Length: 383
Image (cartoon, rainbow, N blue to C red):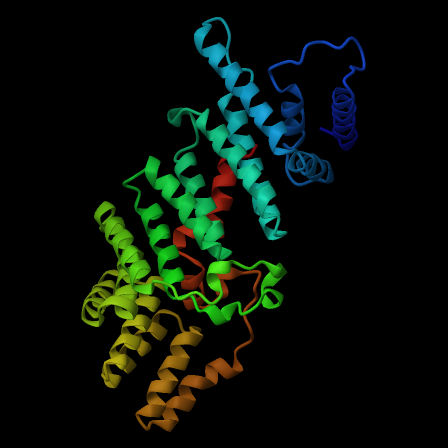
């Protein structure tokens, strides 16, 4: 669809909207159609990629009010209800179209969240939830609804909107109560809240975009209660998927930091045994080393810090931990040797998140919350 064609569609929609608000029709004042033709016209203009025309159509859809979107959703719902009772007709917006619409509205919401337009983002997400409710599970891309709840909860978690993250993740678990990834993400939101420090956002002026959550200011969290909730979610995730090593790793860390040093050490040891190779193994050895050092077992801690570096030589957190432990042990030569690669290394490229130290990625959220997961879902649905 050309840019000129898209502009023509949008121009016609503006004329119709203005005429409707004035109480007259450009022609003969027909009764309003229950089916949202205007909505599908704009949605169709969103297809095809990221050209200027597609961006223009998405911006137009993002400006629709809650009332207008609600009316469009009602029209789609009524049309499907009529098609379900009439064997001679089918719904005018098929499942693939509604799946695409769900992705478009979610992407609009994420963009509005970037701009701190929280109310507008919620409107888009509620529209998406309504669209997904119209779709039968068996005809949508595999796991679309489950993965959507996970993506939304993870996005709010990444933005430290932890109440919203929990709300969306719990909504997903209400529908998919034995989903290990949803339980893992919910537990991580509780864990992050339990470890949140009020001084990270001491005043409105110092928070990004001026966005302040009152509960993060001068409020003493029930850290033990939140940590216990995180523990329960991680145990549920392991019950649903015993091979989910990240749940074991997070369980060990939340126990060690907040609830029980002994039980935390046990779970972290099990995590090192099950993690295999890669970033989870790096984190398991790093956290176990810190726990052992906390217990005064410095030699054992140094061993695990070295094991973490064997998984990822550029892991700066493990190098700093190793250097600190060696310094306390009186090994100044070993300390310098551990620090030298950190001093000489170039900074990571923020555009490539996997170059970040896995410790930072742990704070951002579970591996299931990676941006690559959302991109994969979009690729399956978008034409």
